[in-house]
Image (cartoon, helix red, strand yellow):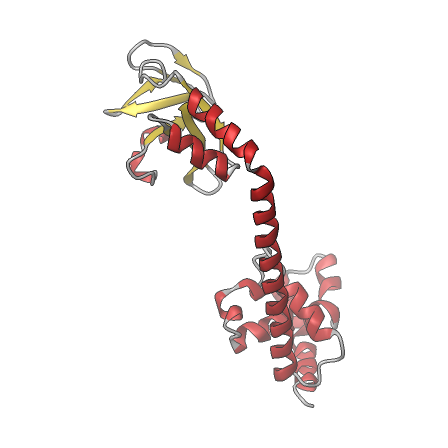
Length: 230
């Protein structure tokens, strides 16, 4: 049973409760637990929340950091709720089980200072946005430095694409953040391949990606050589 693999859960000293993916049965009372039900494992045995003495707690979904932190602070007893992700092959936190009075107190406090926290979030977001703009500008400058013949606007377009947040593209790699020459080259090559060759047309016609890259390799090299000259 996946829920029993407690070694896969990094929750420190927390009580861990599993949101199960497959039906189970409580080892003490025999109640049937359907998919999505919560259970706790004790000595390799699944227990329903009532038998685990956790049924008086209420579920607080993840997402609101301040509410979660405060609810946990005021709750004498709490438990971390996790569920196994088949896609990521790991347990992921779904929220907390906390005492109802603790949640109510936390909700009141959060409502009381919501305006302050919203301002703080907006300020932090602005700081991150400005830092990201500086990084993109620096990335573009690195491109122009290595490829002085790059047409006007190309360096900025490459930097914007390669460094798009949460994209997982080369501009977000650790090497790119250190302005590693190879990372810069990969970003420029990708732009040339897509915008200055027939690479995308080859893909649209069903050609294998490796084969398509090979077909445009010479043209990519020619463009890079031209851009490398002032």
